[in-house]
Length: 445
Image 1 (cartoon, rainbow, N blue to C red):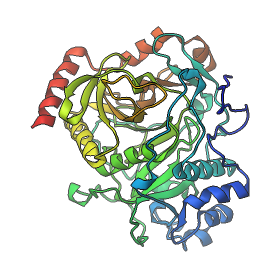
Image 2: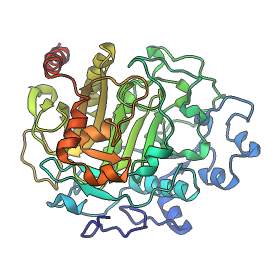
Image 3: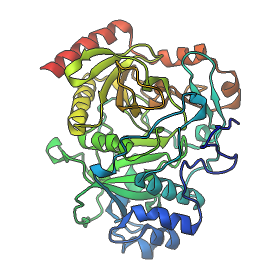
Image 4: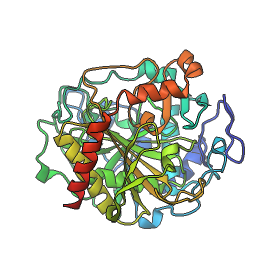
């Protein structure tokens, strides 16, 4: 097991929380100060359990009704631009040392404390302790982590046949989750009154005109099969029953979430259908990873400079890159979704990854990422249910983070082998070159 030297060193067996929150009731209470209560306390839900007497006052369906966790009122995290962390977020010059400091933001305190509390309550499919981590030798510096239990115990992915596959209420979806898996709701200030909803059986996907155009309330929910510490899902109004097609409001909240964290390793991502999304119900992933990735500093080739749109070539998985210093996040989300909407229309699977990073053409020091990088990978579709032996190729793997399923592959994996697996899922160069030209035309129209 690797230990990260310096101020952020973590002891084996202890939670890898990069902040002061502890698992004690006093520590959790202090961290919950970042949250406000809307209608009911999630502590009440945790202490009383999933009983019929609890579900009805929370507005949840009874055991004989369709599940709709979105109908409950949970604790809320209400934020504004004043909560964004602009400076002092970076890495040590040696990427093996992790974050340069351990400060935490209001958002970090709320997420980390609530997540650790759910782990102690046994709401995950397995207990996630300190993950054995190995930097694969080579120029890329892949971050490999051994996570055997996720490979064995995660929910079986749904069989997907199209990037545009409609929502299916008969399959698993997030209205069926245990309400105690919800950490809190996120909402941009000013907060709206907590809505009262009747349980919805999700009979249809709403037309585009009914989908919100600005970030509304979004549930932050534990991923019960976590990749890393703090692995959560951002789910917009689950009762809308939206399929896994990226929307501007949800992406904007994802961009803002990265800025709300004081940890340089808090990342947000999206897997489309056909790109190893396991559930066809709209969601983003968010998680902490204490390691810098090559894609955060690799140079980019300008494609459309006025929109800060670039092509990232000098990485194992070449992809499209938007960059922002943090201003105009709505416009950035709109530009990204113009690209992903085009990919959906063309039935091209894709992954999206949001992280702090340096300017694509700049030479900023590695420990001081100056803005946001949004990576978009157009890739070969993977329909049906397919599993690679060592790792599947989704948003983390394309970014250089490799959760490995078995000890043998973890110990023996080489950079060459990892690149070979990843590049099997990339578009052929002629198709990618054509797509570059098409996207530039799309964005400059």
